[in-house]
Length: 149
Image 1 (tube, rainbow, N blue to C red):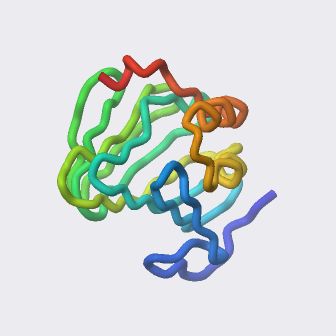
Image 2: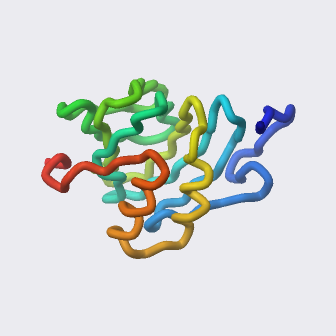
């Protein structure tokens, strides 16, 4: 069991000094426990995570800078700095930086399940098909590409 340690994870750093590069996006873990997993993303214009489902986790996004376009349960919505996105388990969702500016957001999932292990395995992979395959083994199921339209 992983318990929450007191302290601060500084801006621009990851918990324990860890950083992940997942298909060109930089992720910083901020808090890692069995009950929750928080991470910061930095998405440049044009970067995205395709529509997928977490069957065993609720997920949240707090947009800190910029704007995210989200496909949330089949509908397009926008989240701006300060907005909180709520994505219950089992709801298809994907996020896209369709703007001309970078976007920074804090994500967290509850419970953690296999997400930290997934990010460890995805770090520095460059083959999207392999990312999809490994994700399915960690309770993250990507939908067919047409779900992103």
